[in-house]
Image 1 (cartoon, rainbow, N blue to C red):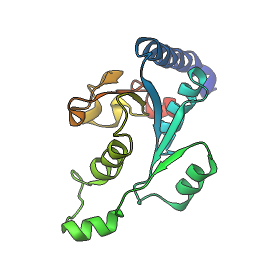
Image 2 (cartoon, rainbow, N blue to C red; image 1 turned 60 degrees about the horizontal axis):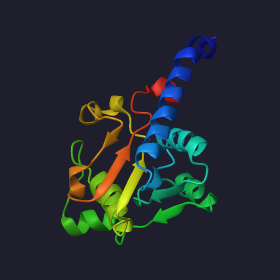
Image 3 (tube, rainbow, N blue to C red; image 1 turned 180 degrees about the horizontal axis):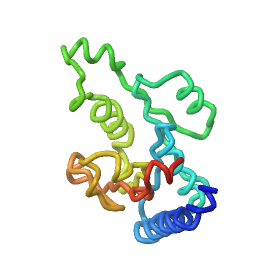
Image 4 (cartoon, one colour; image 1 turned 60 degrees about the vertical axis):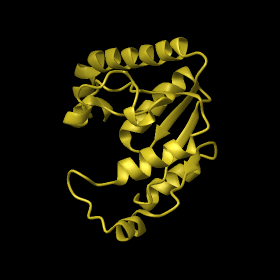
Amino acid sequence: ETVDRLSPNLNTKIEESLAVIRDTVSKYKNYEFIVLTSTGKDSMVALDLVQKVIPNVRVVFANTSLDVADTYRMAKSHKDWEITNPKEGFYNWIRRMNYIPNRVSRGCCTKFKEGNVMEYLSDHKKLIQFMGVRNGESNARADREYINHNPKWKDKDWYNCLPIRKWSDFDVW
């Protein structure tokens, strides 16, 4: 009953997300398209939507060295996915840096996702990275638009596309 009641709203969000992906592909014709996935629910929904528009899109999984075995099994089961690996594992890095992760500064995203992927893709000139980031996940993500340029990329012609940014947890599930 809940699915039937909420389907019209979810179908609207799906169509809006697909339109964002189509518009991005049209506007950025000369760019390479990549889906960054963690194998989590948000990135898998984003991947599914992108593959409806770009069936053979390139998929990159960023190994943070912190994921559970099932995550790695899933990533490795997709033979066409690329897997980035850090030069140093997270626990070795925090020991070497004498760093204590905490609620506001974990280090895993900046160093092991963003940093690892930036290095892995450094030779790409024009890049659109589709991601399963949602505005409702945090205050820092609340104001993000569908297309973003990360200041860390400085002069790179790279953009993130966030096709499910308006989705709720419930929509994803």
